[in-house]
Length: 231
Image 1 (cartoon, rainbow, N blue to C red):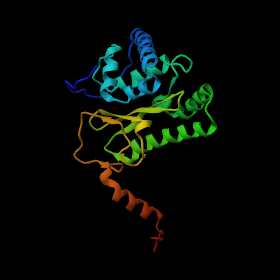
Image 2: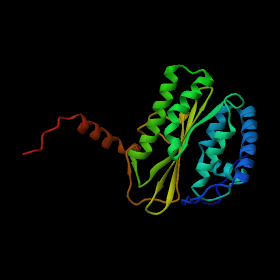
Image 3: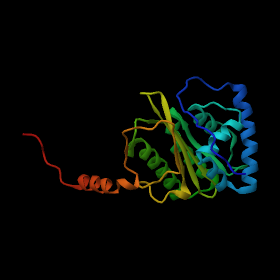
Image 4: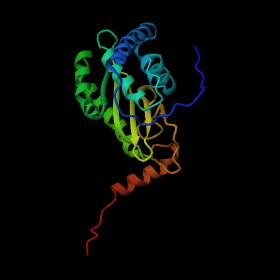
């Protein structure tokens, strides 16, 4: 079934928590929907769908979380973390919102044990997680500070990332989608999508293809000799 773009989803920052009666229902529904997609199309196709911002937003609405806010990102990925299991679905969600995002490396290590990954594979996933966060927090500077990082990994060693940054200036959020199959380089056009209804007049994007010369110059400057500026 084809999906058509019929509107715009705003991502204002909202406080509070989703009610427990709703999250319980969302978790049960997410488990069944994910199970059907994975059974029919596989885990790689499932995380590919999640890496599409339009599909992700619609998925949140289908789960009955039809807010137009930044909470869709944190709640839906949190629901998936509780609904998906390595045994039944072959997909694990690592990390999460706020302090939980700092547990991503340990979550990846735990997933590695469940899936029987090699030590090198676990190190590679941990590196990928950190690089993704570094790119969206530092290489792209548009006024958004990351506060949510969800790293999805499958038993077939595919991965996807859904993370979000906030702007305290205008109380808006920006969501970043990554998919391992489409990442040829972490420093040149690595994203599957970036979702935000706010467009900055001035922003630094060092991973844009047009920024190649700026990246090379930055590396050359970093490698160059330093001089003591003290008199």
